[in-house]
Image 1 (tube, rainbow, N blue to C red):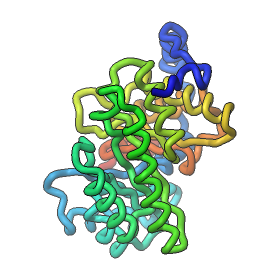
Image 2 (tube, one colour):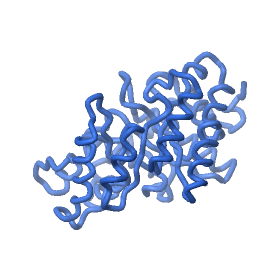
Image 3 (cartoon, rainbow, N blue to C red):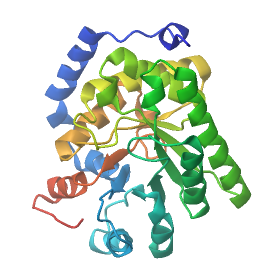
Image 4 (cartoon, rainbow, N blue to C red):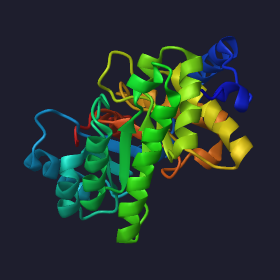
Amino acid sequence: MVDYLNKYGYTPDREAIGRALDIIAANLENVASEQVYKECFSMMDLTTLKTDDTPASVTKLVNKVNAFQASYPEWPLPASICVYSNFAATVKEARKADFNITVVSACFPTSQSFLEVKLKEVEMAVEQGADEVDIVLALNAFLAGDTEAAAEEIRQVRRVIDEVAGRQGREVHLKVILETGLLRTPENIADASFLAMEAGADFIKTSTGKVDVNATPVAAYVMCECIAKYHAVTGKKIGFKPAGGISTAADALCYYSIVASVLGKEWLNKHMFRFGVSRVANSILSAVEQKTVSYF
């Protein structure tokens, strides 16, 4: 079992994190601006992960994004639309604007299945057009202490993504969801962060949005500190994605501020920072337009 905290010289300081988050919370009004809100909007993975999603409902969302700048020409597009793997082809067929296709895959949201099943789902999603693949850390292995099995699963997913995308002549990014609400402690969150980054994640992501506790500022702060440590040691820049429970413009500002504080301006773009959202898009639009907007 790898001692990741010792390897990277990192120990979560609960008191320091709490003080930093208090300062961030007190400063949110000063951060709020049209420019920052639009930056947040451009870094959204606009998400629909409903049991009753259909090709028609997914196509309707895609068409809203396709037409968005006709109604809001001064606004950027969301970075991607995030759907279940079986809808990758649906989004690809309907897409007319410049945004990526993100899928949740590998038996999301529990990751409870055979590795062969997970790999096949990822393979099919990439073949059908996924630009980004979000998978869940194998908590059944990680929480049982078998961190090598959890890491190997990520490596296998990375291998399949690279093989399929390579045949297509393109790059596909991998985001690993830690499900921080089930990891419970900052130390576990840090261990999982380093494990995922070492195993091949391009991004680390807080949550599925399908458990009781999803993204929290504390989990986000710890993950960003781990990204900073990993970058300092390896020179590799890993992206960050909070997801689950982010429903207001103020929530977006909080996570934007955490990234700005811990990682700096280099991370404040859609290539390094994403929000997983289904509700916050209208909240951000409403904050800037100064009226209630229900476009999405």
